Length: 143
Length: 267
Image 1 (cartoon, each protein chain N blue to C red):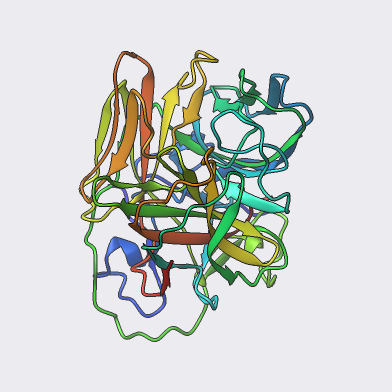
Image 2: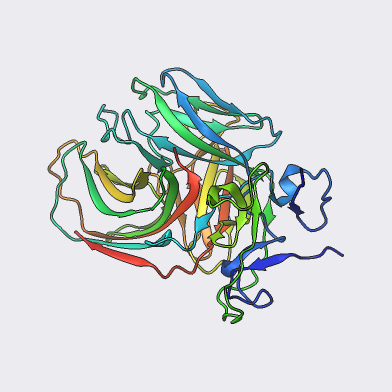
């Protein structure tokens, strides 16, 4: 069996410390397919301006598109959130106060951007916000 | 003198292209996966070892959960739709997933609901307690106009290089991989001054974040409330907290894309 291995500059390539390995056919890496359609890396702009209140325990689908795999892939997204008084950037999921959670997930067919409500009153109007979600769908499984 | 190896995306000049158009460079790791797999925690009221990695250092990790029980909420028991799905840093039935030098484990808490939980985990070869900073060559470049014919690919051990399954490869020029840019360990409040000029993908790990298991690092959610919060901008990723001396680590990735695909939704 042949070994393909790249190590950090200055590190020994034979019997390296595991932390010095840049790439090796022993250790796969997360990969994003560049030729997928719809694209497996992209941006979703969400303009939430409605006077919507979402009942406790309900999931609202914000956006969804097919990933093209025959299995559930792994996916995550970074975000920029702005509701006028709160500006945050990070990696989803994002908790929106005491009202709900914005998350991205993958199922057997689609990549989904969702809002899940845990508003115990079920009547609180969600304050308007904008969200930019930069998503990445990986070839590696998520389930 | 150490030699440098770089591989650019088809159509880009390897001598001039920016970070975001490199398939790999020997200056920074590709996020090698040491271990990965699916594991079902049979009872979320019981502390459970998910995987014993025995790497001897604290590695970066990801987890994805398939929610079949209760999710992010304020303590009441309401389930998400029970479909087969995968969510990064998803609901864990109220318990916490943490990692130390030898194992990945699940620890229940007082808010834990009943039932089982299936997770898919990735454990990387990256030591989150060791400082690492990759150089920034540049962002943005012109095409080398060399055409995009040909494929460069390296198959996983035991896999056939002629395979059409992209998951059989560690490197494939039809794919891009997140590239490790920075590991910033710290104590309590920590800032990773990444200087990338854009808001990157990042992951923050805090030792004993949930006060359930000393020595175990947990992923921290973005924009947390209470005494801590996690935020990022084009130059820094910042974790701020008060009243703790817990060890922290921020792992920052180079963005593998100049993303051109976009979608818009109005609600």
